[in-house]
Length: 68
Image 1 (cartoon, rainbow, N blue to C red):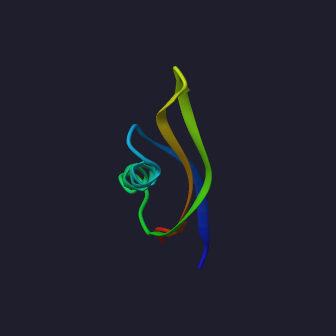
Image 2: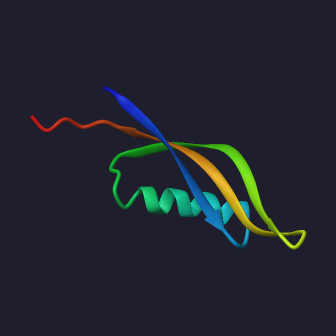
């Protein structure tokens, strides 16, 4: 069995949890067999001294399937 992982950035105006969920939800639209995720860097977009956007780097792992 072979697995692959990718890095994807989810964003949210609300919180980190929503940014992570956005990343996983969006990845699952085009990737099958997602089996795990790992939170990487967390960053924030600041405007006028206030947090305007939460950004979460998520490493997503999935099983590679061959079509034989």
